[in-house]
Image 1 (cartoon, each protein chain N blue to C red):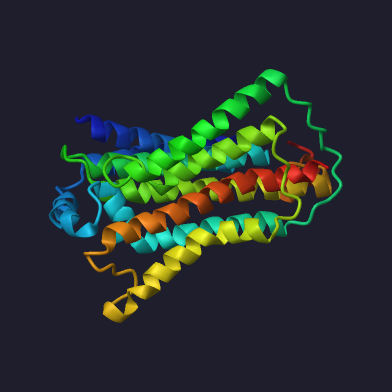
Image 2: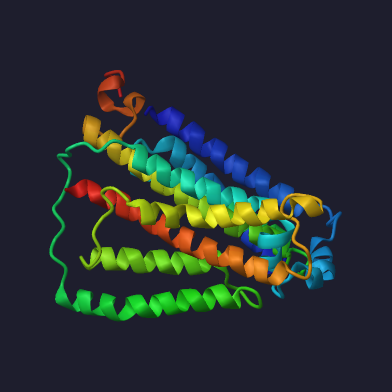
Length: 220
Length: 106
């Protein structure tokens, strides 16, 4: 790339940073008080933590579509055809210490994921954090050579991947006769959110782990 | 200046750094990294500006949580595509960024 073009891009990006900073310093006061509105409706949301209430109740659409995006990304990775690669390195056999550690840690990580899922209703935590811990357990087991890569996910695995989205969709549609999509009856909100989050935890964990495990299968 | 505003300003700087990296770095892995830095800047701006009056706003926090998961998925797909390109062409650059496509005076 030409030197003057590089300098120009660097200059423009610096200018953009300065303009953004100036715009932030000149921002007016909040026109709408969202924290107050969330706090006022927290009792009806079925959970006691405001972020979880926003994620699963007040702005459930975001979360529903996000899970769909996650699944789409995984389908995209699966859809890439595998080619024999010149750049593949055969996986080195895992160190026995790593294997022992992974065997010890994996059940603990599942336990932590369950805790995070449950505590999400009252404190920071929830389906995404729990799913991320589950996925980390999967990647750790794969790195220790204890879990095979996904060459072709079977029926059970594919069901697990879609479970979170399907449960969420079912709950969303079930509220339709009462009024609108994703409208939980306040009496049932708490168990419904826990049900959705449990499904999401499993599917997010499998999907995030799958994003790694699917492409790890290309090594063969 | 509150700490929250400082986070937002740092986010603006990260956004600009990421954008410059995305435009200037020809290597695809660096482009993907730059894209992540850019996205982290946006998250910092959202969370920082959301609490600039001292009360923590859960709405941008939830949006950022959603955004992080989407960013992970997008990064994984981008990495898979970059690897596909490497397997097919042996290059980690887009065709227009390859040295042989540039004029000789570079």
